[in-house]
Length: 192
Image 1: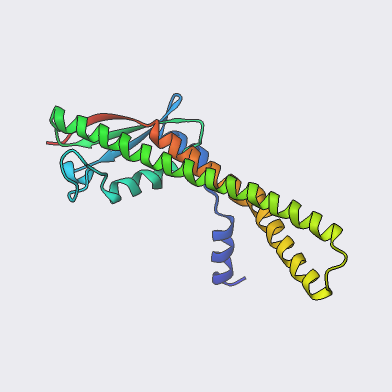
Image 2 (image 1 turned 30 degrees about the horizontal axis):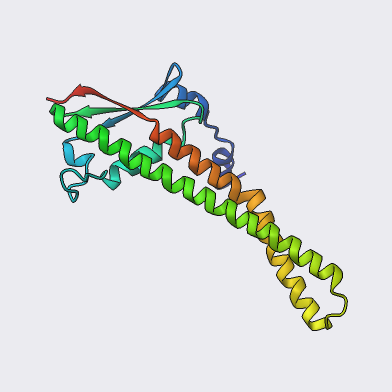
């Protein structure tokens, strides 16, 4: 066996104990602590937002989403912000902005899940309607009959895709958004 094959074999057999790593790095009791180091206020709040209508910095939001995907769903999330000493007003603004942005994300996830379910109901109605039509419409020409079969299978395909994949994806997105909307914040160590 040459060195290339040995390396490939070693890489394929390499294991990571993700549960243990997550437990060691993030979990404290029944909560997951996401540590976050910031240099200043604009690391959290977008510098483009205006006072009274603040939004999160996209990099900050991406950081949270990147970490939370490893944390098991049953753990609550605490975001621990380490960095400079923020004034009370800045802390309140950060907490309010995080909560508001996460509630917007939750609302979007709820709407997407509801829209997918409404689509599912329409597909059931279409599938049943086309099934009934095809059962009782023996008088239709063969070419038209094939067209109605294609329409029936379109409804059936969309229905099955929703049941097997989209439904769980939408529920996971809503769970993730709910976890983020329920996330609490605390301000940790101060730099300097």
